[in-house]
Amino acid sequence: MAFQPVVPMSGIGGWKFLQATYDKQLQSFAKAPQIRNDRDYMIEKFAEPMTVEAFLKDSRLVRTTMTAFDLSGEEWKKGFIKKVLEEVNKPESTFLARLNNPKYTALANALKPVNGIISLTPEAVAARAVKFETNSFEIAVGEVDDAMRLSLNYKSEIAEIVGSGSSEDAIAYRLMGDVPTYTVVKTALNLPSDMSKLPVERQAEMIKSGLTRALGVSDLSDISSPEAVEKLIVRYHAMKSITEGSSVTSSAAAALTLLGGGSYGYGASASQNLFLSSFL
Image 1 (cartoon, rainbow, N blue to C red):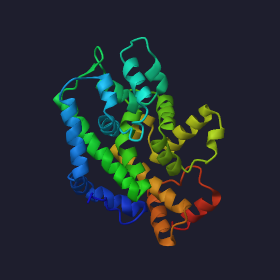
Image 2 (image 1 turned 90 degrees about the vertical axis):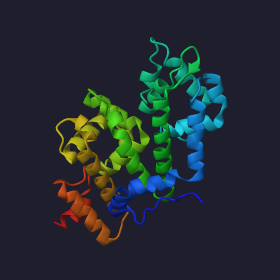
Image 3 (image 1 turned 180 degrees about the vertical axis):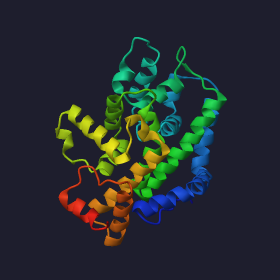
């Protein structure tokens, strides 16, 4: 029987428990026969160079590879994957830049074919094998509690989304383009559900101002620091508990955690702010 991740409760308590037991749970999960066999299969196949055509014909290899790049569920897009691998070799191509998806860019750069041949170093394959295990674990966590999967995804992906030397506008637009990460941010900041109707520039401004205020950072690039990441995830679970109408006890704990940061939820309604202030 496959190992099923344990998340005994929802909200902040569940997140704290998952964080405390993460390493042991991941180790147990990685020993499951299906995960171990898929990981070993990927390592074996990438041990030798292969053509792009051979890669795309191997559905199992494509599935495990896409999972390793946090693109699970998109393995059926073989025509699109082929185009990504073709365009990465064209210096004049703006395809990946326009796509603006760090995960596909990472996939393209890692597998970058030379004369139609994919050849990876043993170190690169080993790194991808580790990512396959962790991303598979996140998927399994999501089957127990999707909010926990979103939290793990945010924690692992935010640094890549922020990038190095990126402008605040670029960071905001990348956040908006990554649905799982954006879901966490929107909930944590309590952004309006209909904000998608606003001009995209206005949406970006709301994200930038909301994040800098909620996390107390002067530069948006600082949101990828460990402290800021944990604070945002805690806010996410706190606001989610409040908006979903959790019990008074759990909502009180969430409110106190939020108030510990010195501010209310960005865009919170008058009733939510009244609720939060009742625990001061």
